[in-house]
Length: 442
Image (cartoon, rainbow, N blue to C red):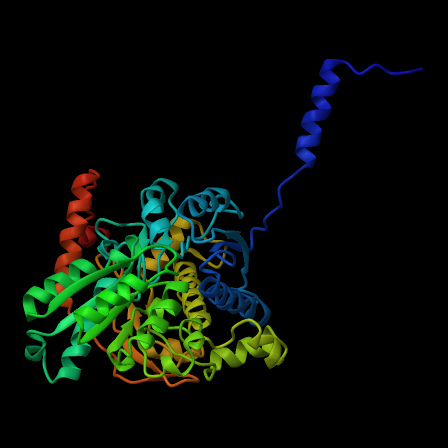
């Protein structure tokens, strides 16, 4: 006898089918970290090594230590192509994944960071824009959910000026000098302009601003202006193909490379190798080690690549941006570990990870334990200060590798912090934010 399915039966089957089409079940002992990446598009040469370094460090922790205090780290990549709209879509897609939701978000784009900051407090999901994003977010009293340690663009801009002063024989020697800023015409590229402008007034150098439109493949007119201006120094706030083109154009006008300094996002192998020997002498900022000669690399090579150096090299092993991915993963996982120290060795929520970020302290001893001796400077984050002390150093391309050619340079905190607090206060006023009382929370 043929059975006839009633509408109610169909409805019941639909519910059952929906229940069976379950999204992955996340274990209670898993810590989920969403990864916003750009392995495709015009900025892929820079996005790929950062993503590889981050993922390799997580794989190493899982293989060697079973994760963080016995809690396995899981992740999922979402491709943004360095596009703000796609980045926000990735955030919305991944923010609720995992047993307790995402741990934190690394936007890897200043434009995406700007869009996510208002969402972070609503979703209670911390943002870690490591060395990029909105510099004013360093004031944790206003930006409770956003962190930009270990340093910011304003700190680097001031360190660059300090470095040039040292090279010229003293800060007083900056008076009358000409400095050009060649920058990506985006929120990212415009970040250092306020600091460089204030310091130009303070020290008397002339500042010329030269914007380069996305993606930066056409710069002939920019470098014609450089040739006419004849700057004593050039700073570059570039990204992706823009950096390669700028360095090539600088060589064509025979600009002295040792007076050309890029931001830490303009100082990787993919920026200089295409220019060949013409790039020798080019400089850039950095806030972590270069090369693969650190114990952390030995651990990754062993536990992720089984000692296969060729396979590791195929994933940008030891390149500047690969190392930046490692450093980012170290900060994030150590913040989670810090949170576990207070809340227990279990999966942390976004709110708990936020506490871990705000109470993160990496001492020299801890960095040594992590295989990072000499790789990075100690750091301590507080409620008021989401940046840390912000030192950078200058590296120089010798044709094969990057050499460290300066001591660690402390930023001009008296200038930078005052501007951070001013900008943060303006943001708070515009967005009706009541500053936190950090003393009361402590």
